[in-house]
Image 1 (spheres, rainbow, N blue to C red):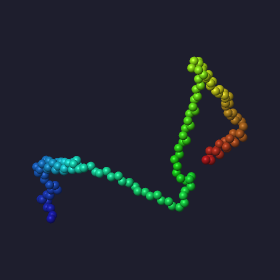
Image 2: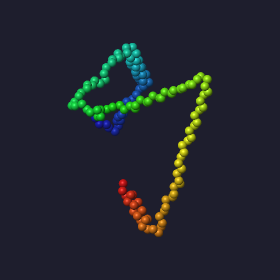
Image 3: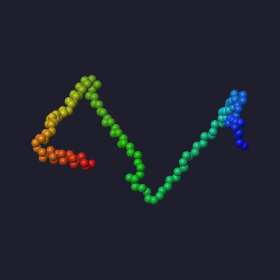
Image 4: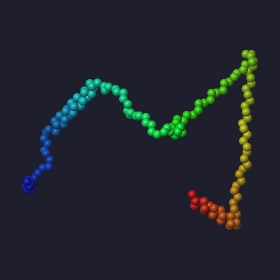
Length: 143
């Protein structure tokens, strides 16, 4: 079928006055479906709790037993030593308390002599400068 110049073909449907009514019907149908699903979930009994293994495993031994140092181990620190028991000797109940021990003086720190600044090579001595320069260049180029 060909279209002549006098005919025009519309690419859309004409919508009548049913737009708001169709939207209202769709909302009601969806609401009823949602309410039915909600009531079915609310009235159903809770699922039974089953105790089951998630993964069944078996011990398998292949070959000879491993040596002890290859086996995994849990490293735990040794238990702390118990504190020494303090023994209190009392001569008599009327005895005067013993004077407190004298505090120990702080340890003496040995004084270090001040460091001397490094001597700079003289500018006139070309041999020492060139050997130092060569040494520096060698260490720069090697990893």
